[in-house]
Image 1 (tube, rainbow, N blue to C red):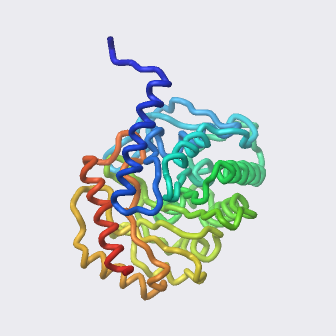
Image 2: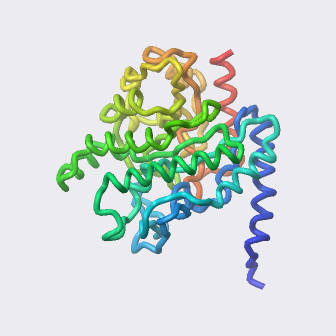
Image 3: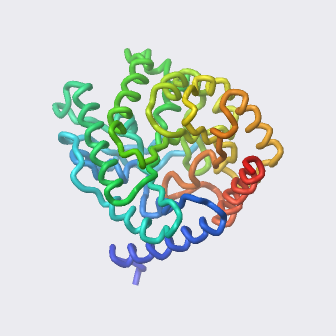
Length: 336
């Protein structure tokens, strides 16, 4: 016996583990619960490769992080993009069934990630605008499908904005004949088309970070190059922003937050290592951000999830719960 199990046995184990971590989230005092993405190998590929017209493939190399490289895997666009059905709809239904009175929160990659990470096969899309149009429509159908399954809180995870904030990456794009500011406008337009006409009782937020694999990172640079478009041009209800290190810059870009109904969630607690941040220093940083955004529009969270891929960050499970508990305790003290 080599310990192999079939898909049904794996699903049963996943169900039990998701029930366990949902109950733990409730015990910690979280109002919204997730399934921890425990059914995924990658935070983005697992969703994107199940869109119509997208396939996975074994790449020659992995994604390069600081002194780390992921497993070799990629996605390619081999046909016209669309959304007809998706296994994660059933994943959400299971989460919804065990959430009880708590909000069941679903996370999926932003449409930007297919443009950033997908290999578009020759002859499929000769017109970039047609590609982004079909991508937006596929996402609009996906968002509706999750809503029809009972989802009232959907988060779009997006590292493209950190990519577009990096001066190193912006210079590389320019050297290749690409205007990064044109990409900013293109990504924003696609996201806005994807989320337009959504139901009034569906909250959509966006999470932005600079990469997260085995406690390492991919990009550096503050939000300034993308801030005006991001905070005053994308029609979501809130932003989860990485702010746990100097690589994310200062709070000045938050001056572009004009809407009074836009929630800004400060990722001041790192998910990359186990040391608990000094609560008073976290509170001080929240106060600094409050010079740009009303305190009642601010929230607190970890900088990113604890496992963007199945390998996870270099923390134990108990250290992860301690981080979440830390966030809850500080938030309860700030927003009494």
